[in-house]
Image (cartoon, rainbow, N blue to C red; front, side, top):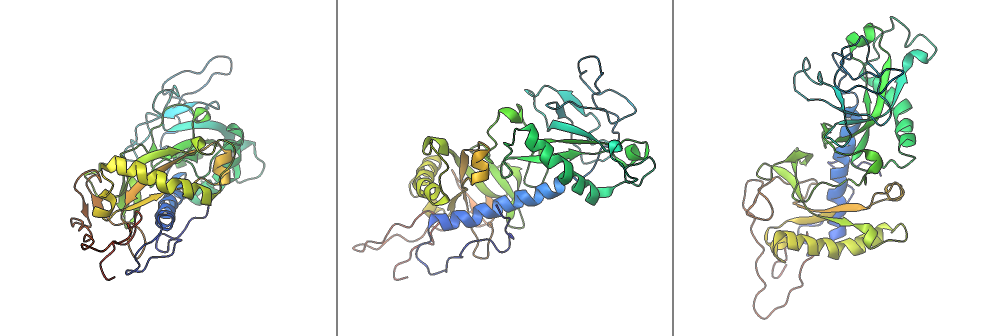
Amino acid sequence: MSTPDPARPGRSKPRRNQRTVTAPVARRGLALIAIGAVAAAVVTLFVSGGFSQPEKITTHADSGPATSGPVSARSFGSADPGTCLQWTPTDDPETDRQDLAEVSCAEPHRFEVAQDVDLSAYPGIEFAPGSAYPGALRFGQLRDEHCVGIVDDYLGTKFDPNGKFSVGLMFPSQSGWMAGERTLRCGIQQSSNTGVPQEMTGSVLDQDQSNVWDVGTCIGINQNVPADPVDCNSPHAFEVASIVDLQQQFPRGIPSEADQDAYLEPTCTATVNTYLGSDTALRDKTLTLFWNTIDVTSWLAGSRQITCSVGKELDEGGFATITGSAKGDILINGQAPVPPPAAPDGRALPTPLPGAAPITPGG
């Protein structure tokens, strides 16, 4: 799936006086903006920094089982495929990730190892003793060169590039590199929209990779694009109202985007109305209903779930800022929403689709 420029989303912007705009149009524009924010974050995730003390990691003896907990050693250590790693993130580079340790994948963790790569085994002077530290750009290239294929092989060619997991890279700090460490660690992590590794539970091998958040999750906002999950009382871009499993409707094959839209428009409308507690809440609160669809690549990887969410689209593209859960009273850009006027007596006006521009008499 291509990543749109959030300032120029891939949709036809409705005119102010247009009476209706189909839900799929609104869905496509806002969903692509949300996906684009995630994709942009993934690009920078793996180059955000190394470990300032790379020796603090679980090490493995050649003739025995893996040990648990951080072990002081003079190397980056090694980690077998399927190992799950956990650490405490901080804003201080001197303390961030210093308690890196192996944990059971059934416990919360931030990284699942696919394979270690020993750069010292590669010929040439780039990774030789005394060579210059590669830097962020080169580590990004190494991630693409090595980790994408490794993760795909680890998952049995079932990695969903549009899913909730991303390919990650751990690499030595500059001090570790100068001390002779040349190990890269390819793996999988679940990242927030801004690229922060989130805690996950269970091996990725056993999970649906669909890019969904839990019902009731509010996604924060930064310059009109989605950020990280926040409390719904904090400013946010949208709120997840329901999760739909497409396998129930399409058990025999890959549905087209048109077929998904045809099914999801009434399904999301019904589930969101239930979540909001009223069939008129969307219109009364001037909110936009939107959802994502699953493409062929994601479907073949086993992803089947999508989210139905509510936000407020801006005419210029992107999201308005919402405060409060959509199930109660909300503010949109600091103002209480003004419901559109009711139809005058004796005249029947069509009911607008979710996300439609409000209908005004004589408009």
